[in-house]
Length: 467
Image (cartoon, rainbow, N blue to C red; front, side, top):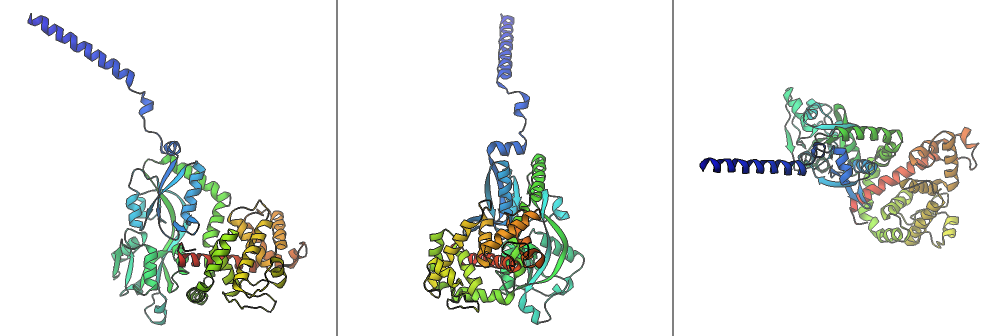
């Protein structure tokens, strides 16, 4: 009897085991289905590219027209290439960006990160997209004393603060290791831009910033000045998540094509071309007039901008370039008012009194809008506005000439970065005599456009989103 029971239990166990095997076989997906999906394929399938972006002037910020910044636009262009949505997680400091990059859901971290030897040991960098150099930035007033440093040895005894876990902190630690007596505060509380502001306010003597960050912020913090470069040239690159070889390969191919197409040149021109125009006295005067004069006319720029669908900061920048916001301005050539309209242009626009601030601003906005309509439809986006601005300065006919000349030289006649190469040639006899509209001061037109975009950025920074 006992033997019979044992036999029955064994039989039952066997049946259950076979049943479990059959169930497991028919309900387990094939091996290829449970393998991990390659990252690039997953990104395309999910239709989302998750990125960390440093909230700073050189990388990503919310401007008057929405998200802006060199690295934001670069990443946005890559997301469009993939056909996916760009999902942004914002970081306020490099240390915070690095910490956020450890999240497994983050695909790319973009925070103006230089590929230092130390970082290469810890991070998976993508291809380089920008070249910078670390610079010591100090308060301008120190130039009047013997305290303004000219080399690393002269930093001893100065109040210096740099961001923690940055390439700058690596440089400082390396100098200290070599025996230099440097009293430097490392902070994770303030961004590089905030430290530059502290230098400008004379709350600290010096900090360290990459060359592009210094140039971008020089017009906002006018009391900072370059002391000396403290590193060799370094390459900026995105930090990629682990096991992303396919993503890295795709970025490499895309970035190469982006460079060859001229799109990278356009992007760099848009964000950095006007920085070489910085003039300390001119910029400080602009800030004074923003405080004392601009409020009188701000409402008119806002009203005209809305009516003609043009950025009010842009209109205000044009007016500053034209007259420094002097409503009674007059030139020897007969142009008058805030927007410096000619008598014929004013008559054509229906402006009866060029010295009337409101009439001048609305007339200038209307004229710019008309110029935009005359620009060929092949000219798109920001290029169209820059072409129109050039036409506002030297006339639409010279735009036509410059475009024809660009074609003959094998350049793209519909993008600003190529047109600005051609415009200076309009003042040269060998070219001017062959053109329909003849001589024009094309170099001045290029400076005119760059200056206006510089003023526009300063105005937007001063008023944040109040435009």
